[in-house]
Image (tube, rainbow, N blue to C red; front, top):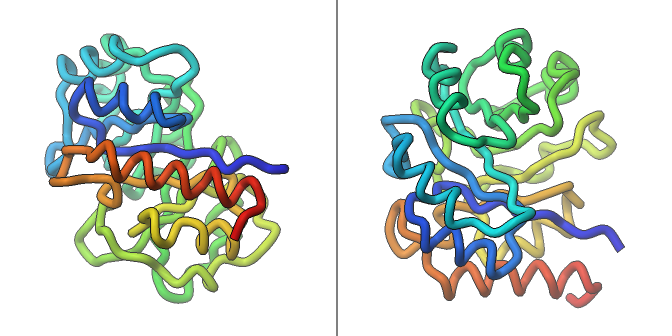
Length: 211
């Protein structure tokens, strides 16, 4: 059985990080992008990470950030994996001596494998919905049929996932992991423990072969 891994992104409070870990999230995402309603500062990030148990990967999300900004955060915050959600080049992404994944927004007619092939050093590719002018956290679902099978990198699926549709996404795409933010919130940046539990339970049921 292949287990679908889960990242819960947009964590802004220590209690939400603990809840995510309690229900089995493999990773949490911290957003270092000031324009996001889920953005955190260095002090918030430190507090969240200090509250986490072992074996939870901390992902730092950046959007077209200046290298000095990222390096300053990395010097103060123990981030395990970088997530680049803008127009960052492969050379830029690999320049921080940290594993990374690259987010791609699913524009119409995107030549996905051609783009993925440029990011050979990425640990995975996150596929998110395309909404003009919005870099992520849109809450909208893209057309899963756009994704060809047998891509050359592990795929993380994001974009409008909830407890009601995540099983369908896994069934159609068989991704390495799924990434949820708004789908487990009561308000932007405020996670809902009941929604997290329902989301994780649904994935667990599917991974056990239940419909």
